[in-house]
Amino acid sequence: MLPRAVHGVVFDMDGLLVDTESMFRDAMMEVTVRHGRDLPLSVFLRMVGLPREGSRAVAMAHFGEDFDYEPWIAEVSEAAHARIEVGVAIKTGVTELLDDLDAAGVPCAVATSSGHATVALQLGPNGLLRRFQAIVAAGDYARGKPAPDPFLEAARRLAVDPTDCLALEDSHNGVRAAHAAGMMTVMVPDLLEATEEMHELCVTIATTLHDVRDLIVWSAGVPPA
Image (cartoon, rainbow, N blue to C red):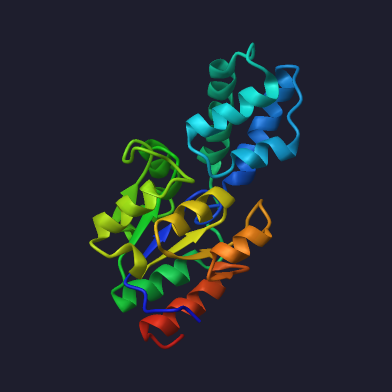
């Protein structure tokens, strides 16, 4: 049960709407091996949900200040995009949840650390891009997650008070950002597990977006299908 009615929903993208976090993981691991380096999974997971600057800081802390970051991350991006261009799987429950929100007249936005070009690449071919009234991506805010800026900007564009918005996230930094924005926050874990901190910051932890759908349709007064 949600504490109050939902007047807007803000979605993260990678790992929440589309199954891309594993694609980025595999691409990064593959490229790192080609560069003769080692990248533990724990280091990659610390990058999940961070903007580019934050990810760079994590990588440099691991590899050392002499690491040539730009060619490496460019190669990672190329490898990841090659995978994405083949096709991206939509996460379980996305379409049904968006259908219910549309029926209830609840506006939706995306708040992501990715750029607009990446959003178009990942959400355009599967028809998801047109389902959102606002897209907030890198370059649209001053500070990235875990700062609240992306979520506050999404609420502003939806013309909904942040406290009346539900934020859906799969990453720790995303949850921190949404909570800092004052939104009702639900974590739907992907690669990262829900820690004790996540349980404290979230209204609930959901297994899939089908669970979120049950919460929102009840709150919005729309009878489940």
